[in-house]
Length: 149
Image (cartoon, rainbow, N blue to C red; front, side, top):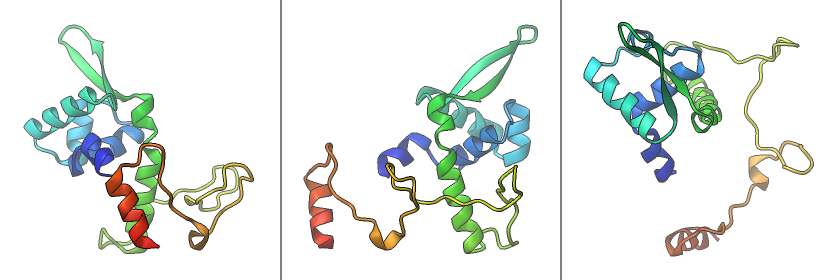
């Protein structure tokens, strides 16, 4: 998790990724939506480009104007945004109730993230989830998991 957070950056980085996922792409749109100060916005966009979450694409030569688009790596963060939105809605993190709902466009029913067994495609309840060391686990991870036993 720490490595992923280092790549995303900070709160501003996550808000920019949210807005890019929602279809905003231009500097002024991002600034208006987030309220981020201009110098901070420029620095965060540069960071997101440097870590290959976002690409900068020229859309006008005179005067030079760029827009920002999520890369495949950046687009794959959509589940992170959904998970944070679901948690925030459950605990009223905004203090104003639920600002945005996610629904199935065919049925109109609400949808949510779930843990799914890769082979059976069936939902797995949290009580059945087990963590184990992965191929890149270091001693600290192994010790953390061993301490849970």
